[in-house]
Length: 180
Image (cartoon, rainbow, N blue to C red; front, side, top):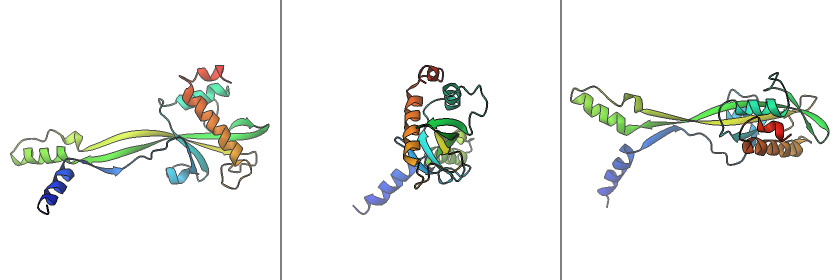
């Protein structure tokens, strides 16, 4: 059995991909500091969920839902929650899953040893993009309403969950006009 372990380890090591970065798996939503999720995001708390739709669909959805006429769609969109005015901002974020593929590297190494040109050079690394939406909510005093101790946190999160469900259930942004 001891002689078999090194061969099994070598087999699984050479016939697998090594992940160098794995995109997070968010089932429904997650509220966290946006900068901890992706460095380029603000330091505010954000309501984050995976975006299975095409690029700019959420932009078009927000534009249609709030009738913004393509003006200031991504930042400080006024929303009404229980009669109080808040401001919604969002960021579309890509976090790729990156892997190193060892099998193509080994095949090309053998080809180069025998004097042939490598044929799998483009397949050494693979990258699969995962898109997320990070939504932030502030009040009129520009306070982060998603902070854990903010008085409006629960109603802001409930509003964002309804907005998320509406966005994910629409087939395209034009449906938002009919669901206001």
